[in-house]
Image (cartoon, rainbow, N blue to C red; front, top):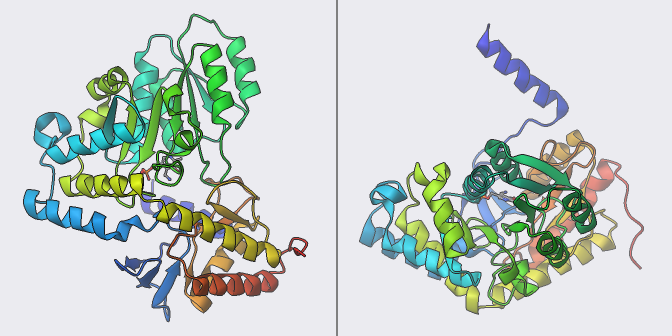
Length: 406
Ligand code: PMP
């Protein structure tokens, strides 16, 4: 086989479909986010980032930076090993205490990313609980799907955000088999939010464990940033809460929080925990500082919500179609991969606006979109430019507008 030719042909198919990914090579500037320097777009130097998951700008918060600097100077660069073999440092243990407290749970367990935490925890729980049946929301993230698949446990998809469908499926199953219901709070591409309470009611009725991915909720919702489940007073009814340190908390890493026994079980059996080097202590300290700050400060969350609502109002006023949802994610619907890429390129070249196109397989074909994530540090001026740019390119692409708001 001509391997090189094979790789090129496969890549050409992606290019042909408008799905070939080109990364913007950015340098984020501490203190200047959402503004960044771009290195690989001719004629474009300064850009405004509109698609970052550093939702609150905590990646540049002075408390986070100083905790990281201080720990780096005191402890050095890396953790020096897996958690089991010399990689467990004081910073990791403190961060796990902070996370357990955030979610009102006995315990928490760190991983190197949110992806790894889902993969490791789900593959371990579903594989090691004898006869476990997994019920997985139809729109769950790839990391959850991969973890469940790896477990080889029996898995059923229930209709997205549909507790009645979940109930029907559970009712048809052997009541004596253990069950694990897996879902998210905020779904990252449509920005819709799960009916958590109703799902938990169903879980409890059928004696099923519940596993929620709050990756797009933690830091952003709830009086202490514990996520949507905290905002709705439901954390104590959930078996496992999974989250990331890489989005609203602005650093990197993932975790689960739950009872001492469930966390200890995953710690003891999950290969994705056991066989990989621990996060650098400076990252753990930075994440802990971010969590601590957001437990008491409402300023970032309030400003974030205000900015999101303002961007929505401005887009509605010029008829740019978005998915309405109760979250901070604004999906601008284009519905065509090539147009999506064209819009993204044009915004970058003409307005220094960086918003990555979202295509299949991240979203279904025909629902290609731009996923806008306003932050507390996007200014009125940034928003004016975004709205102007989108309006211009919308007309140039002859895309339909919604009826204008009065
Ligand atoms: N779960 C969901 C729902 C996600 O969207 C993501 C990342 N996009 C992850 C988990 C993985 O988190 P991380 O980026 O920390 O690996």
